[in-house]
Length: 334
Image (tube, rainbow, N blue to C red; front, side, top):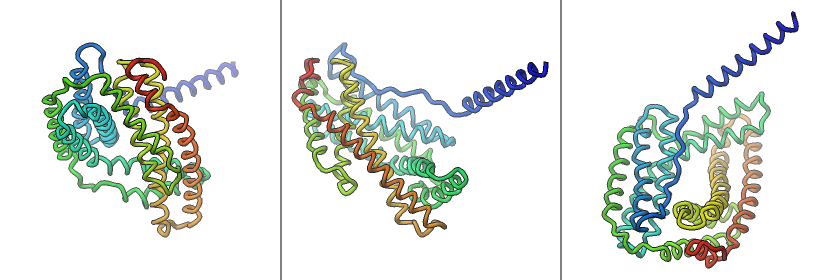
């Protein structure tokens, strides 16, 4: 009987813990996953491209409501999704060159760049805090929380927006810019967009990515790392956009491989930001050993990231631009 009672108590505790865990998961904010727009193979190509680009603008417009929210998780999510949608839009819009007036394309892309820059400070602030949390995991549990609290208090304000920022006004400005972009895309003449032009545009960007990746990879060559990341990011977005026009699985796999390079270089960029701030503000930490240990961990992680990113980029970009063009235009590997 006692064994049964003990078993019942254990089951009750397990059920209680499961319920508590379920309640915690329920309490955490959940947002629907936003998938990138893709060109649909049916219909005229120029109009299909226009529809995909307008879909990205619409994603950003919907997220403007979240940008004006008083809830910080929703606002952070809105910043993240708006930036992603704008990057995808810009990558897709660059496929229109030669098909529409270059001035029109440039005007749209300048609006995209200006809109994205308005959101960068908030994104950097959030990533910086998350990066600090990751670095502090190397400390013993007894001191981890205090070290993290000190680090966040010292460093986070560097990238924080002002407390009096009017998010509703910012959302209204962004919405106006996005509506202007939408109007421009509706008026653009995309009749000259064709499969060969799209394949040529991606092949040219592929060549630039290969040249950028050939430059030495280390923390002293941040400009070249930025170029590799930018080119790989745009190619990956373009491949996903056109994936239904060709061998979908091959194009999406190639995009995912490029995305892993982008992710590793992006993490190195964030760690570089943290490294610079730690070095600049190290005198404000009560224990110099804390800063020294954090800097050591950051340096070692950056070295591992760059080695891994270089190996991945070398493997992915080993394909020549001509084979990529052939894969896109004919569906056959070079």
